[in-house]
Length: 348
Ligand SMILES: [Zn+2]
Image 1 (cartoon, rainbow, N blue to C red):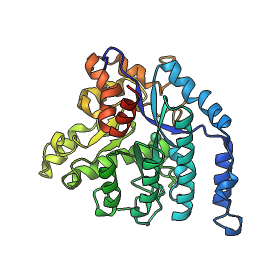
Image 2: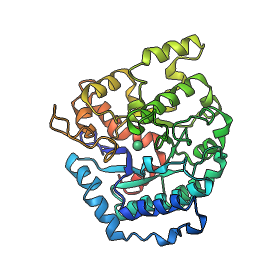
Image 3: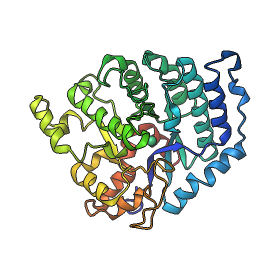
């Protein structure tokens, strides 16, 4: 493995550019919640391979080429998961459709995209009900990870914390298949929380604190969580978290959480990446951009896209070349063993 030119693996991409027919089908599904006789047939949604190709080539793939990234772990659009809408059956049908589209993208562009699943979560429903879709995505689609929503209510936080046995059926499957979960909420339906500006970042911080308070990784020593968006407020407040752990008589965070929790680089400015790479051990940081996502504009201070995070990782003085290799490639291979195996099968 050449360390001079790492494979650039972006572990956080969503299909935000899916053809409009997908959203139109979802609108019908939502409308039919009031009038079940109008429930749309999933088979009525027709999106051709050419449409999929175009939606990717003009968008994600174009930017990947421009920015020099090779492979994206690709999951359904996070804000579209909207687990709070309808019931389990609503989520189940919707997740199956969205996951299948990501699978088709991964088949059309096998060198550039590999899938991660959204789960058919629904508020108040046993997470065990998500297992069938999870299994299908791993076994039939070759997906290498899942997105787990710690708050399927969409901003009301009425599910038990991630350390609760409530979630264990999913963790047991994750361990069995050796897949990590990105902890990722969806649209906020609580007007106090802007979806990507606060709900996402709150959830990242909340997930970390839940794990800090509990002892989940004693029960699941090989379980892996990826906390996106640079870990929310976690790196910035690392001293607070260390101090809280100390007061709670928890082990040092390195031992308590950092064999199991990882952070991505979806932080949209240089000082943020400098802080992340200074505070969090390099082995726990994975390259990601979440493009084309929450922040699509160009930073007038730099002239570059905010979400062109590769620039910040390259520019930070906190990383040696070897460490940069770990962030771009090595850590992703470790955290996503199924992706590593898929790459090795291709001689990469
Ligand atoms: Zn995301």
